[in-house]
Image 1: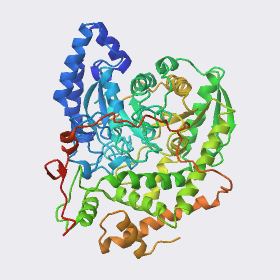
Image 2: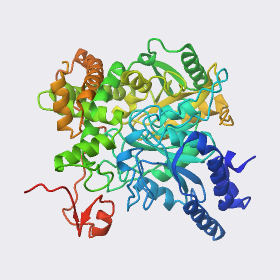
Image 3: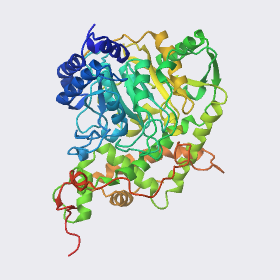
Image 4: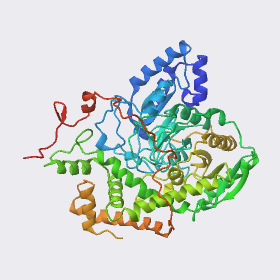
Length: 492
Length: 95
């Protein structure tokens, strides 16, 4: 077995036993990046020298018997997390010169636990997208290809497409992502790996470039449920620097993965049976239901009546918050400044037109409109009320069941250039993932099967706020039943 | 509610994004498609529903109103596109 095929759990054991060094593990991943990143474009920045220095420090800690949860484990960091002294672009031209002088809380937590950072992973610009096609640093290729059409380059999903592709292609053992409307779970599903969006407030947003603050959730990617639990255990925790960070104890997520589902009640929300759902997606869902039943869960039909309004609500709330958050990019204090500004206002307008890509400009304009005088009540206030109804749907249903099972996405990965004709077609990718962001509840995507083209498909488990443990328990059962863990991406 | 070209220009000006005349028709079409799709929220009965700003279930915490950090002028200015001494530099705004 290659070192890059190991899980985080197995690598941590191997490092402690002295089977291999942290330097060898990091070198193996840097070699894989050197070989495959030119095609995949999963990394915007590779920090090889710093990674080797961190690996040497990990070896020294191991020699002293001071290993922590992630000592020597090589990770990819979504280029939305500020990393001290390492350029952080958010996938945008406007931040292309930006080198943060500080470290985000989540990445600081990972460093505290001994992790090695291989570099900064590509993403949709400002995390706005479902295909990684909007990055100013070029699209990311999904390491998976269609059996029938192996030359078509598929998207890894988005926005955390580089993170997901890196983990699926064995360029990193795990990665950080952020999920505002599905940006961890959809790429996990498209790339055949595991990703969890924890409860809102579980992971600090401090030092994460803001998109939509009430919807942004940092979280991990890995190739197994247990590895995601290990990463989340390190990333999570109260942070006074984020006023929405929850002062709630971090439980032993890893222990929950093997807990099983005997006696749990699992809800199957009927509204997720979207019209025109692919037969394969529905079949996988039914298979997931059968697996959970066989493992001792009781499966019940439930209703989340406002599900169909989730996407439209999201596409008011998220652009509104984005238009406010992205007002800071003005060419004055950091980032790009356009040349030729005649006065201050002209400087702002030129910088923002030059620095932001088409999708980001579109969302800022939509957000500005729905917040503008005369339209605020009709759009933004109404969306906030529908959001309250969506949260109430979840609160009601979690009085009856312990977790929900749904598909993660309405389709498998599509090809680069597809679904680009109009923005709404792209937005529909997130129909199953957006409600959990609006409600702030935790949700995981677990790879559960392959479609007729040999492409991975994920199932989603949604839990109660701050009950990631049940989400991991259900995810663990699905993972063991699907037997997906050892599967490799097919090409690249 | 359908946006006309003048509204597109006004919104772009509010957002401080320079939009050229030849971009207006495409932006108008895209924004109208998105806003048309969003109109479905008008079907929902929201009478008596309190708006929800976020999913954080707790009230925002209070803290002492004291200085906890600061004094990093060089770090703060390190990413400035243009500076003069300890100040950000911008095009002249006062004649």
